[in-house]
Image (cartoon, rainbow, N blue to C red; front, side, top):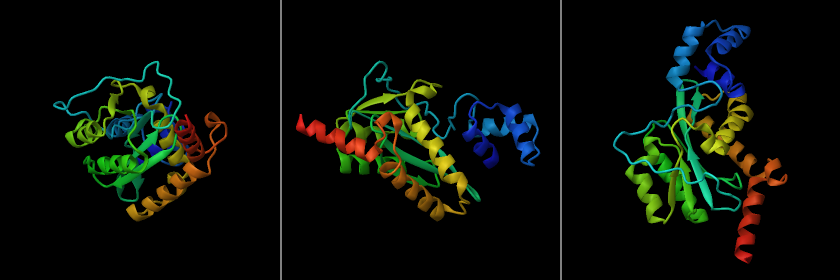
Amino acid sequence: MKAIDRVFTRYPFFGSRQIAAYLRLEGIIAGRHRARRLMAKMGLEAIYKRPRTSQPHPQHPVYPYLLRGMVIDRPNQVWCADIPFVPVKRGFLYLGAIMDWAMRKVLSWRLSNTMHADFCVEALKEAIARFGPPAIMNTDQGSQFTGSAWITTLTEAGVRISMDGRSRCMDNIFIERLWRSLKQEAIYLEELTDGFKANRVIRDWMAFYNTERPHTALERRTPREAYCAGRDQKLAA
């Protein structure tokens, strides 16, 4: 599963047949049917990357997607959140992060060994405490983001809630790209033996991403530079 995830992160358009063939080149013998079974277990589908770490809860409310056609160009206009899995030596951990949509800045994050919503809510509360609430929060329809703790935190802060349509990977595309960069540039370059090392590697990469890694979409500025500049312009106005 770790080998499949590594290949799929690099080539998200690969299906089970291509994954199996690619693994053979690396000396890992797995037939197409086994690759397909394991991909289904991880929630991986060709064309786009979306590990189904967030499963809907049938009794939780679902909110409409509010961002269609919207121009998103200033800090704290829209935040987004998501949960990918992080492979370690003896299994997987789960990473929850809050990101400013327009400026690509990671505002807070938490690593957990369970899928309970607590670590996501903690990251959300930290981001609001440090940066103030956004106008809109966008997530998928996973149970962590439809549960009462998450919804209550947002509504008490006066935040409007937006959720992706089912099976629409493009609705939260920027944070999906963040996960792909994190895995390619850090996670798969290290041997993550346990949660302590995973936390250190992710912490170092997040700091690099926010403060040193320029973005073409941000006029070659870092996310931190773009976020601070945008907030300064808003205060000046």
